[in-house]
Image (tube, rainbow, N blue to C red; front, top):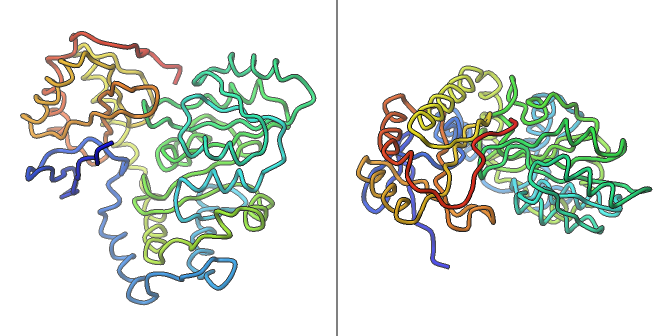
Length: 378
């Protein structure tokens, strides 16, 4: 495998690529918080006053007060009993699974789940069974095949990064046994979905009693790090049993400071969420009007159907001619041939969105390969 292209973010919605400055419709900095002056100032302040690194596990001599402060504010913001901060978002579901090892007889996992959940499922020390993507009926059939008595944990993304679809949590909870748990990787949902940005649970109208919510601070919040949100007893088990927590050096201190600033800023960022939804809805409607099939999803990810290779190359060229970096990805097993995935930001301007639509409009009725549903339940 060859190294991917190098991209250098410059200004709010642009990247530098091969000597050119191009409009950018990729990445997951949904609110462009990573470049926000408040986050950069917070990181500089912590670096100046507290240094870069504690150079030790939190369970030895590395438990700096800033980590407890961040966890306390996360628990308040997400309205849960406790939070645990990890050095990286990928580690959050893995750490939760390590804490729960041996608790379950079976794990069921959405076939399109992120690699972090795939790795987490291997930590549970029980058989792992895939079910069809976002399919509660297939889940019910798998559960029937397992039979009783059983202790079940279900693993799924909240908002799926490959296409912007959302896990139907209410439907899952209806068919799961009463004592089953859901381990939710909500990396793309937190800060985005729900009236207050609390993620897929809020969007789906589901309480926390049977869900462990994991997330990242590197996307909507513009900083870095992972988080596990749940009850106090789960936190205690992570601190006592998770090697991802016990054996790692925590977040660099300036990033923890930036995460605190991002959390506080996003807490009053309802206008940003409104702009994000408006921009994504406007862009999706424009594509549909031009003949593209786009699933109706609640998030800012807009994935186009797979095209014939010649069409894909023509679209890439047309985007480059329009000054836009082509967001063409081979993301997961579901798109081995690759597909265009546009990620809309709250900070994209109407002229920038129009430029992308203009470049894509001529190809709305071009030949397709593969299949992609034009409608979604959510």
